[in-house]
Length: 255
Image 1: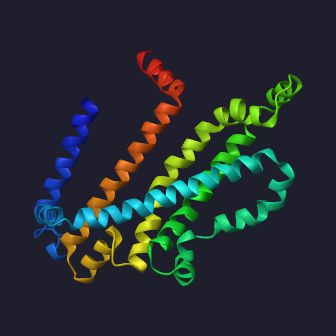
Image 2: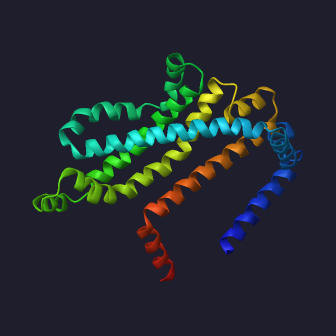
Image 3: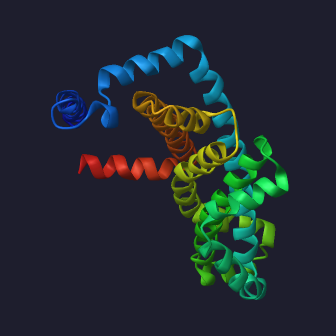
């Protein structure tokens, strides 16, 4: 509770400093102020533009996140269980991983156009590598001795994956999922900024094009709020799928 109140006080203090600094320390044209930003944000809410554009960004982010995460988990599991295939594809995957994914946006625009599909594919590409690498590392970290013992007991590959591999690697998987949430949103926003007339990225670019600093901050606040909602959803899913981790954390807090 004290931490929560401390955060509230810190945020209010920063807002108060921002309001006082606007016009005294810095030109309002460059930093605006909380009152104007709140007015712009409320205007977006009242006119419905925030929900219309926010829904587009949410769909693109979620679709890209689900697609990229699903493929990333599958490929990470397959390569984690197949050493030969992993060694064969390792140089290719590492080369693609080292490439800044945003640099693919112009190419994706040429291939898939400027519609929602391009943003979804760009987002999925970004998410894929983060989830894949964590899943692969989690699968490879499973004790080989345990796997061999279960094989001797008659366990088949599907039993190993369902009962040992995935339960052991799930913490790594969720680490990748939590890391990829903001990057998924980045993919959607960048795609909208580069080529779109819908979405929060478009709102951001449109306000910047009109030199509307308050509008830019209002769009940024909407993006931050959406990112927090997505992070919260992943954390809730983690608690439901990993109850033992929550129990362990509660025991540590009581000690």
